[in-house]
Amino acid sequence: MKTNPNLVRWGLVVLLGAMLVTFTQCIGTQSGESDTSGTQALPSEVLIPEDEEAPEIGVKDAERTLQTMSALTGVPVATVQNIFNSDLKAQLPTNSRVEAMLETHMMGATKLASEFCNALINDPGRRAAIWPTFNFAEANANQFIAGSASRRTFIIQMLEAFWGAGTLEEEEYEEGAAAIDQLITDMLTQVVDPVTGSTIPAPGNTNAAKLNAAKAACTAALSSAQVILQ
Amino acid sequence: MKYLVYLSIVLCLPALAGQIERQKAWTIHNRVAGVPPTPSMLNQMEADLLRGDSDAAITKAMAHPNFTSIVLKNWFKPWSNQARSAGGQLNDFVATAVGMIRDNTPFDQILYGDILYHANAAAIANVPPYARDSNNHYRELEVRDPNWAARVMVDSQAANNGVTDSAGAITTRAFGEAYFSAGTNRRMTRYLFINFLCRDFEQLHDVTIPDYRVRRDVERNPGDDSRTYKNKCVGCHAGQDALGGAWAFFNYNNNQVQYTPGTVQGKMNQNSQFFPDGFRTTDDSWINTWAKGQNSSLGWSDSEPKDGNGARQIGRMLAKSKAFGECMVDRSWELLCMRKFKAAEKDIKEDLAQYFMNDTNYNMRMLFAATLNKCVIDEN
Image (cartoon, rainbow over all chains, first blue to last red; front, side, top):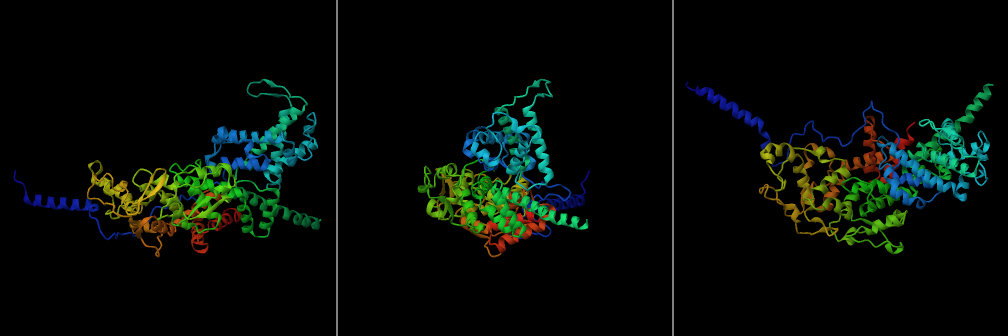
């Protein structure tokens, strides 16, 4: 069968045209001019879309949390530096993004707060700066009798010291106070473990029980959102 | 009865207004100084805000030593390592950047100033003096003095590290260790764009840029397919290799930045067998081929040359770009407002960038104050 020369000719033309269209990137220019109409570098920012909630708060990183708890309790950083460096720093946030906050960060903050509160409650001078009228030295836990003015004063003075007086609505202080009040009750009375069903006996009306309850309340307030968020 | 209602409303209003101001003061102090204000400071800042003088309240927060020694320190640390970690030691770049902000030095000089901050070691026990081949001075300073930022003083970088083409952050030991060590010095270009223009190479990718400055170590037909080079590789290399000539005389050796004026470092021309006809680096000249094409939108200053020699000139070109100003605004906003800009706040960002570059002459503290005014003071 004889090949049609016109067909071959047009086929070559089409092939050549296709090659020119396909391989235009091989044609470089020395002048650097290029058609930029309608093109822009991709934006650097990732703007939060209009229909998406943007967090208005952040979380304090490890060093800020350490400095904050030290400033609020008056306990020097050096007192907890060793355990902070060896154990707790790794359990605290590394940046301020609240979306990246984990439960382990909460536990890290609680542990750090317990270190500061232990040092605070055991130091007569420092604790008097926050609770000037609370009788820590009394050989019983009567200062924490449920519904007593001394218990109420202990809680409010602590919240104002750690959360800032007048920075929150009254309801928010009361909500926090109620939770801490319940915590003190749990620390001083017999409770039943909801998981195991076993009974944890009351610690007794002792000074040690009072100090433990005070440390627990302090830890809860010091590791709360008002302190570790920003 | 009506009188009693009005009286109760009037008596409550100051308390309501004070609570809002106290909350804002609490927030500002926490974000600026990293710690809550003392009761006395809280009262002072509240009074400033009630008087309408938010700048006074913010200035009080910035006076706290933790603003520089902790907040800014941990803000800058990730800029000085590839891992973007704040867990490393204090170093010369961080100290310099913090010192510049402390002293209200125009922050564009972070990329071209002959600036270095270090402490007077003789005044601090157990802190060794600054050395160009060691970070011990800064490591010990951070450990031994919580208020280290009050101790550092400005000095000539060239006089201390011997790099006559000193260019702020670029030629610090920390940046040299992170971005000049080993490799081909392309890492420095990339991280300058990431840290100071808030853009990585993927965002700058432009295959329309002429590739006559692409070096010989870049294969032109990777995987035996030249289309890969022309459609992918050239998009980054055409621009970055043209700029990268600025680092021709730089390396990081023996724990220090090495500068060999007139002698091109071997790494700049290594692996030349891949494409022998490619660009051969013979001096520290550079060209900004990204000044045209899509990347012209980075806002290169008309008054700055788009080509030059060495680190200081390229640093100045980068620092005078609109992208630099916008990037500093972006970073400040995330630092102080705890989030990125919302889509509806694009105008705020542009206004802040213009304010920072034109009205304040790159004053970071004034930028911080303006940022807090926008996202804390003005927020309901």
